[in-house]
Image: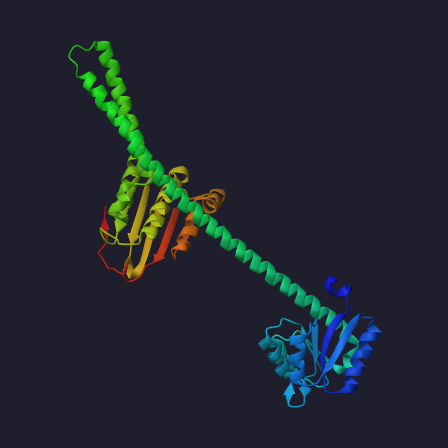
Length: 371
């Protein structure tokens, strides 16, 4: 027996109109040695009252009762909202009725001429019920944990984006401004006619390094939170593709359904970060000579596909891609009602983001244009 019933009697509610059959059940239970308390009721009203007023571990019910059936009692139990194991104990239930009862959720059934098995059937029904309830609790806890993890992932992504924007602002306002001021001062000094040639040489080198630092700060700032996003998703993706092409020497072709695709800011950010992560994976793993980016809002769905002609991701690299960078983007895609698919083979890798758009945001039809 389960631990919940080993320390106390199993409380049984017996719905039966025959006192003789009730006595036979009691005798069989006593003979089995099962620690139990059993109460007899013979009407639906008494059955419901007992269920509402007292606690029971299991119901035994005859199938044929005056004016109603065991299945009527089962329906009444479900209407009350109780989750109890329910066993039909009948003299002649019939195969069709037994099948119907099991389909409707009844725990088990037993013929009265097998009364010696009643204790075993009761124990098994209680064990199955407790196992099912434990699984339901575990599933609910797992679902709650997954929900909280998704909320945490969303919070972290939001925090990261905010921190990126703050850092980009500081680079622009403080570091960028200071470097620009130093550059102006050095340029002013370099223009002095009486400047020593050796000093001038060092000044020119300093100006060159300063220009490099300005370029690096601009690049970092743009990667953190590119202002070009304010010009729209198409412009941002094209800017990203151009920069990737220059840095890596990989040809990048951008195709779009229009020069301007109007999507909500949250969707725009998910699409931009997806393209950014996909291009990062191309640079790290693909050894590709060409990348194609397709951006479309046809039929009310924003679709971003980044595909390369590289060697494809190994199983380990694909697992890492799915586990870390792109997994976070999958969560973000789900938050805006979309989904992310990743496929890889020896012919290359493809990352596809799809996000359904409202009619006001998408559902435009345009001719393909190529960068």
